[in-house]
Amino acid sequence: KNKTHMSSFVELLENQNELPKTIYESKNLLEDVTVIAVFDFGNNENNENDSNESVYLVFNKSNISAVNDGLIVVNGKEIKINKLIIEKGYFIHSLNREEVGNVEVGEKVELRRTEKDKIEYNRDEFPKFTKKKSLLSQFLTEDMFNELKDKVTEHNNTFAMLIHSGVLLENSSIGVYVGDIDSYKIYWPLLGKIISRYHNIDQVEDYEGLNDIKFHQDTCWEDVLNDDENLKEVLSFSFEDKSEEDLSVINSMIKTTRIRVARNLSDFRFPPDTTNENRKALESHLVENVFNKFSQVDSEHFSNSSYKSVIDYSQEELHQLANKKRIFQLEPDDFMSIADISNDWPVSRGVFHSEDWTKMVWVNEEDHLRVIAFDSIGGSHCLYRAFLDLCTLLNTFEKIKDDVKFAYCPSLGYLNSCPTNIGTGLRASVHIQLPHLAENYDLLSSICEKYSLQIRGSHGENTENIGGIFDISNKHRLGKSCLDYVISLSAGLKEIVLAELDLHNASS
Image (tube, rainbow, N blue to C red; front, side):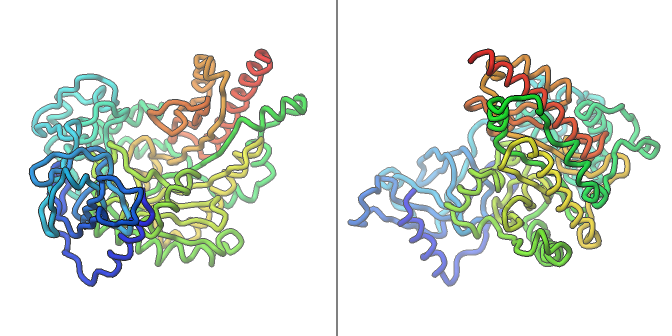
């Protein structure tokens, strides 16, 4: 809010020789935190922009999970907070000086989430869903619940942990987060049904039955890269019969292209079940044993690549990267928070990237890794360029596979925190401006259904389109190869573009 204040925070924090250690760490919804510093700029005569919000409380970062909406209780007074500022790994919140009164270092402050996040349930009783939106609510029966509720995986993941977010947040579309590889086996009676419905594959009733079926199709990334001309032909749009004016309209539609795959390492706990220490160990392993080898394996594409933790970026840098879609959301959503994925946010999260930021790896967000190719040029070759960059990244991972072993099942492919992301783990998406189809949504929806594509709003799932900009992507990730999914997206986009062009010309 005020750069003078923020620079003062950083200077003062960095000059502290010793700050209190973490006194509390919890996965519960109600938390107590300790104030480790209080800054009052209210008496600064040169501070013309300051209002009554001039007392700043600083909490040790490890004491709290991310809070997007909640209450902070100071001196017995409840004060609503919308978010906590994060700077240099510390949580900072500003309060009205007259309202809060005196606050001392070392004072206990209660931090509460909003009522919607404080709903609890009896984990021994079958949850009573008020609506049947999520796949969890549609498939979980009382008999299944009683069969699974007391089972535990080899890493002590319980059934309650699996369904926790879906029970508390009924607006979830899926309703489960998986804590380890073993969960897919132990809780298969539920997960198998969710996977079958979401990915549109045959139902396998018994987990052992997967030994006889191979839904996942592997890809040799080096073979794809060696067939560059064919790749360009099958992924590029061709509009040879269109006029210069029509081509200009077409080329202006696609704004950005992003293709990613989700991956988790088999030797580490998945994000919903990890600890702060485990997350830090994973980040260190990737920096010391994986990312530093990229330039050695592929100097052409990664000679000036680098990794940087989120807490080492300034707020200004983070917002610039977020606006350019080069970094994950700065504030975790409710689903990640309830599932404990955002604990100690954003410590031990970061981004590895090529010099031009077209090739990236996000670390410790919803999964251990999100391997991403990004194209901001647009035009008829956007999918080709992005997929080529993704293949380059994954081929490099393949060459150092002894140092990065992914969680994998021959039948189901790559295993991740959310069952929607298993298999290829691939989501290829474009941000495309379709003002006329926005007014003819049924037509857009029918084309996407034909090619098994998913429509999201301008800022992702559960958001509206702004200015007619949609996020269009493949829906399924299991059953076909990565290339097949991108080819389907390319074919669907071509039909979408032509439909938008027809509507545009008809309105002119």
